[in-house]
Length: 310
Image (cartoon, rainbow, N blue to C red; front, side):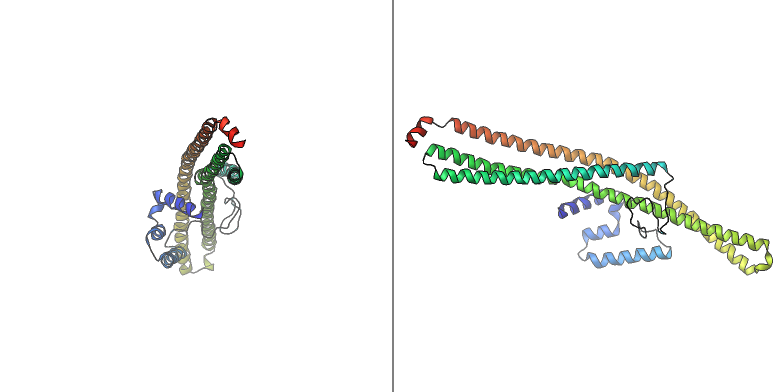
């Protein structure tokens, strides 16, 4: 299960138009010494973020929360003002709840199918033991055929259980995890908003200090006024950059949510089709086995059976 999930995750990242270019992803796929090189890349990215020379790490510094919408890096409450984002998060919460219910039902169905396969196997063994003790050759052959049939049914049910997991259950579990990743992206947006508001508050504070000094020139030297003006200029640049970063994150997030919706519809449709195709194939094989056994049973000569028993 873990291997299958990892393969699907790598395939999804590799198909993304941006993420497949990420240094760490390419390193994971191509390098033999992944761990030390990945650690070095992460350290460089963290150092760049701390120095302000690089973009914020996605989700870094953001607190873990139930919905990912209501906290920022400073622990303050973030109230969503964009109706689109608020509505989409509510929809994702509802989808996740339904997916978890579906996953529980699929797991229960898989357990039942596994128990059914075991029951077929035990029944087949019982028929085979009876055949070994039966004096009538024709009846022994019929019991042997029934035992073999039950063993084949066990194999079919076991195979169908694997198909159920490989197609439907794995896709459901994958999208539950993807919704958690979407929450992380929403948290990154809340954090970007917090950075913008923090820098804006700092800019307003410095402007008020400057206004006070301008109204009372005796309180500050010309050098102090020049220094404060330079700090305000840098704060304005930082605030504008943080506001643009928030707008960029919001725009990218809308695009990725649209991609997520399209992918979810496509993947679940493919999973359902594959699940139904495997289920139909299994049922057709079961019917074929029973038809063959019925033909064999009808071809048994009852006269021969009575003569052998007498």
